[in-house]
Image 1: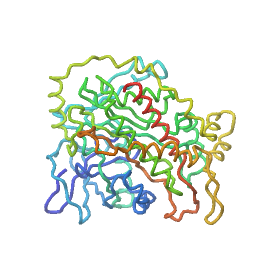
Image 2: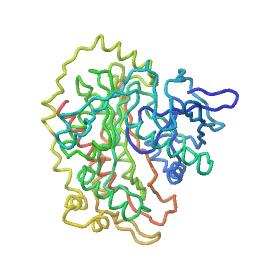
Image 3: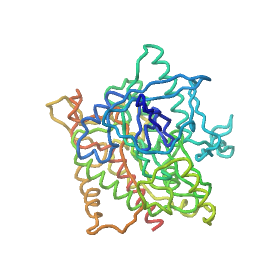
Image 4: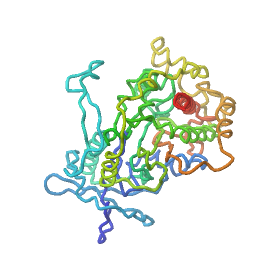
Length: 470
């Protein structure tokens, strides 16, 4: 991104590593992204509990985004950053990505596709589609194209309607330290709607919970990209793929996220597990915070030859150069470790703590209205009244015994050997989150047990993979 000296505008481009969500993310520079402002999310970022802040993207403020229409049907998005903003030095990417008013994105033909997604052929559906898949290669994660097209059309319509200049929030780009960022977007919890949701919205969201792994595990895949050394490209999956998975399919998808095409990256498991256990430890001590509709991002460096380095910056030229260099010296088998995939981790014991989740699994025995009433957190009540503990997942005492103590025990007494694989774990998307400081009409008590239920199942699944491949 470049800044024009005479007007201090910064040109924005689509964020190429967006794997989930529905709002288009834009890159301000290599370390900063912006997304459309939602008042509730802005309020949450401004008042977020301090203990939770380390597990969220850094928040840098608000900017206005303008659309400049150019000849030939092209448009440019520009922003005037806050006074305190200091742009990063970055390579010149002018004319690499161009956008049209229609919402389509054009990438310079000299930039090779670094992403591929297996897509069903036109007309293929159901189980047969797996045998009729075609491979599509792009210079951006395919989900970016979908989100940006919709977002740009809405942006243009809003500007034409009232000539308004939309606001965006500025956030840390969580991928900027990675060369080949492998990203898993997980929709967390057993409730996927906010307090202000309409009844039809609640019914729709509850059906998605009970018909996916959200109801059984408290987590489902909302998007994924994983770098494959066999092709020097990212393999991408979207939320529709995540909704189609059974518990066994979720386990295999988790292994796929950890597999680079040549081997399973077991080296990233210990730091990811420690980070998740630390999050359980912190969230288990948060009172009244609810992360409804949020996602949890798991990230690790796909370049396992240099995964211990930090501060590396992703760009098209560097990524392609590194890929070509690796291609000449990597020898591998195309066997996808089929034996390990057949040894699925048994998760029956993961269900024993959740009475309401067990109720959710019997969705077809109850009406959706009954399910909604059952799934609402039983802790909510008007301010000042007596709060009851939710039974949706493990008790706080269980959390302390099984997770926080595990985290405390896992903290080493001496520094870990260096370098260690570069990983990260963050919570994102707070448009429907709440806590006591927001003065909402609905007040909750105790930790967010639906979110914790998903976290603990993720830890158990990762530990199972670690045992299988240790």
